[in-house]
Length: 153
Length: 153
DNA sequence: TATAAAACCGGAAATTATCCGGAATTTTGG
DNA sequence: CCAAAATTCCGGATAATTTCCGGTTTTATA
Image (cartoon, rainbow over all chains, first blue to last red; front, side):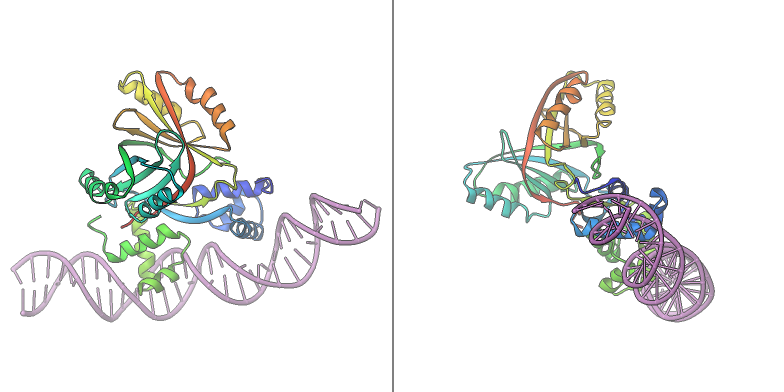
């Protein structure tokens, strides 16, 4: 991070908002040459600051109308139980994210399905069938107030 | 969604994984012409299936080492109280996501900061100062097992 | 201040995006 | 089932962009 100068930061800010900006456009906004921008972006990728570029879809238009956060508590916390849960749960395509957490439960999952019916199927036939689960608490998104992938830097 | 054919879906799958694929590469993978791919992508954007394309950064390298999920409960649930909370909270750059939720709390926030110290500052001086908050419960990410932006379609 | 290292740049060549006219395919209406 | 209409698809031409290179300028170092 400390080896990023202002130009690097500005490029990262721009690409976090729009990964399809041309080098020419970035060049104009930053008042540097195209060749300089090209070299900077190449380096930012090579050094791992930019992990990847992805298209963000409108989830309601592709039939993922329901987002759930599911908090999972396991029976025990041996390495193998934790690892087995992770190994199993990440295979479910409904699971967009899985985080091991501090606090009163072990994992939080972000689940994307078409509707409550599909979530119910997922819950009964997939998530709840995994071994060593003590409890699952599910919360559902009523509305998305903010949803950003760009970190302020 | 129903007016997407297999080619549209395949293009969306590919671009969700890598938004920088050239039309030529997509053309090769799908065995269609470059012109066809170009027109399909243009339409998918125009119709709003593709909202935007973004660079995903390595958050640890840009000093966002700590992710917290904060569950917020408000005093009352009038439209104006809810709206005011949303209006205020989305202005904080630490807040990456804000969802209104069903269940035992009102909002869940995803907060990105450099470390626990920075989170504490955010909590004391920003989040907790907002009006009409009954309680805030914070949970911290120990490890990211899965973190995907691509919906299975 | 001399030297080395790094950043930067313009321009050339390779690659890609974009557009167009027309062919092929699918849909529609009788 | 067929013919007309609409849509999808394609190859090739052109505009735009990426990528690379040699050389200049700027910055860092001793």
